Length: 72
Image 1 (cartoon, one colour):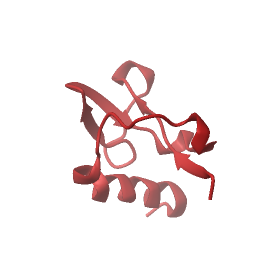
Image 2: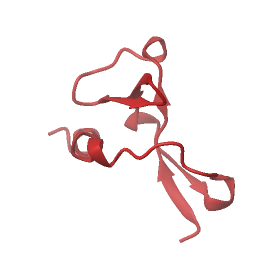
Image 3: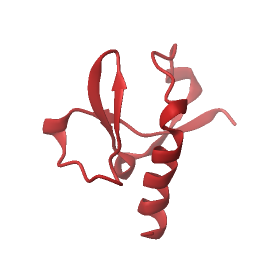
């Protein structure tokens, strides 16, 4: 597919992070929070080179999406 589902990483002052819904991640030595409530699709043509790999945070990111979608 020519699109990807993405979610922003935001600074603390942009949201009131909830422990399970907004897991903290570190990107370029900055503390950011995953914000699944703002997920959207975007065309691949707008995505550039990745600046981080969040594979180590995968379980917490998937749990946050699960919480968003199922409430569990």
